[in-house]
Length: 309
View (spheres, one colour):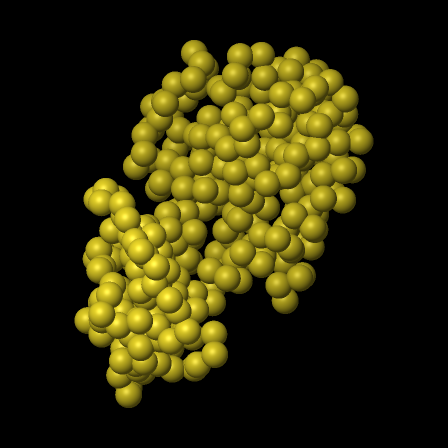
């Protein structure tokens, strides 16, 4: 399978794309994994409670088996369906279907011998997780300096499908505690400056936003697709994005992308934004806010790029 940056971003943005056609699998209760004892209402192979009869149990059981299959490769470089079935206490047909499904998503790959081994996509997704943990560590000092300069709430956001997830936030002197509620943990990408900043340099996120559509939260929320794409083009010109009361009346933000060069392309992996009362963020101080946010994002981008090399 040939992987592109869009494939990789898409996998993170929409985990279902990893294996969209995973069948609902039924473990074979006639075979029991060594060292495991199946109690009443328990699956002999996975230890999962099977006392319920809801239709939703099938997909959950499939996920449980998939995780168990991947765990088998922690001690073995290559495995065939027979050994996987024996280790998990499931039917060989179940193991075959799950191995094939995982291979179709790139999490496993099949060798010439017919056995399976861990796939490249699994490694790349793991590397993205490491990168994002590293991103927080690298960005924190920069966020602290930005907050001290502007005295406003500063945020670090990463893409999550058509949304942005704020993985770090330092409150400004007037923010109070409201930004720590779940409502402000994750937000729609189309109405936030961080989301616009990322989408302008991340085709996978832009596509996810366009496919999901636009929800109006305030009279100022951009909901016209053509207008939204025009805004993204301007972001690429200006190097920053603004959201004027598009998510909440009275509150506005300015965001700039954190970008990495991958395959000769600049891809946004995150964004730094400043949020506060509209007069303070987009009023007389707008130029200073924009320059500070862009400088902070550029600093993190350069540091992250060096750490990758």
